[in-house]
Length: 76
Image (cartoon, rainbow, N blue to C red; front, side, top):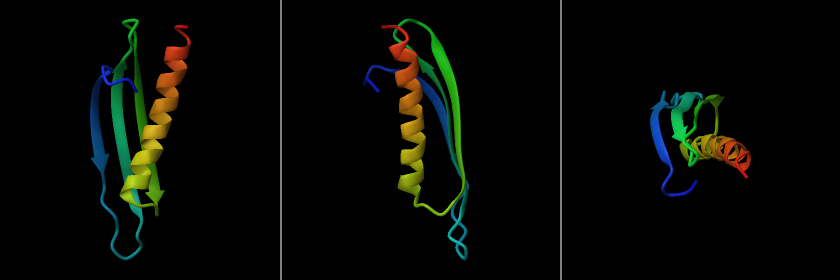
């Protein structure tokens, strides 16, 4: 997203179970303020994942970017 994008967000992470290698949840909830003055709210939870933390964060980032692109494309 553009550097000037204003976002209010809260992240969360359950940690990874030592025996199973499963992360119960990695999440991010945010309010994205768009250039036209509108905003969208998004909540993404990746649950029961055996991926590493960075991969789970990338999943959240990719979903968020696709959502941002959808809302900003409507302005054009």
